[in-house]
Length: 281
Image (cartoon, rainbow, N blue to C red; front, side):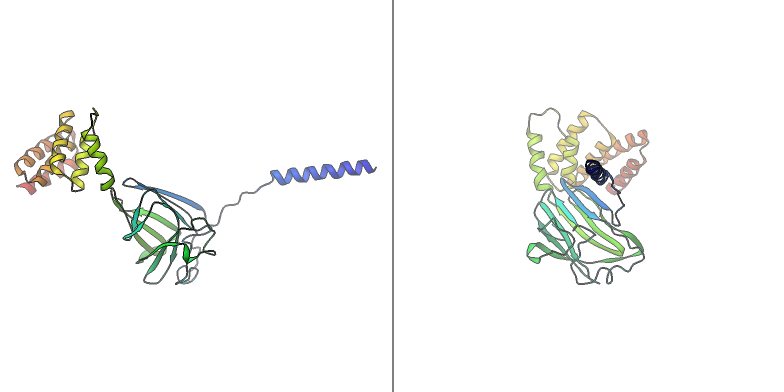
């Protein structure tokens, strides 16, 4: 009897252990985790945060008090990662991984970039860990946004706007990257090399768009046309020549591009060429 009791107890213990190991219920998170990745120029930016919802609550000035440090999300403090040095609202931030805290206000927010990237909420926030602080001005939306949203907008080669959006509040932060100083030496090295296949069109466009040497851009766009004549490539030649002050050459290139765009039924380039020709007359 004693042996049977021991065996029964052992069996119950094994069963309980097996149940504990296998039984698991995965409930949805009240504030789901989100990761957003964006490339600006040659800089990769990653933001990891949790997205609380309004859920019929008053948010700023109530649930999120004015004048207090906020994790800028829910659960873990919001994490932001930069692959290169950047500027946020003109403030320099070295490449690295940081926590993004904010201090909301009615007319002005304080944005905090903290070196203590891994922490729960703002409960262990320490001002000594601040890398930088800077100000941002909130604006109001006509319609509320239910889930906290961090998004990129107005994305250009060397800048973007990082928006913090929740309820009826938008806090825009201008992000800038130094693309030209990084890319121009690479372009120069490539174009001076013995490489057979060179990015003539892309190099000419970058120099045109970023105020670099237009004489080089003109030479490269001619090389691109020599490889293959496309109406968009010829249009860029017209723009480069116009910027160089060669009105006659620009008109000739624009008319050639217009002819090709019309044949290709590319309405966008037809209009662009017509506008350029009108501006040159």
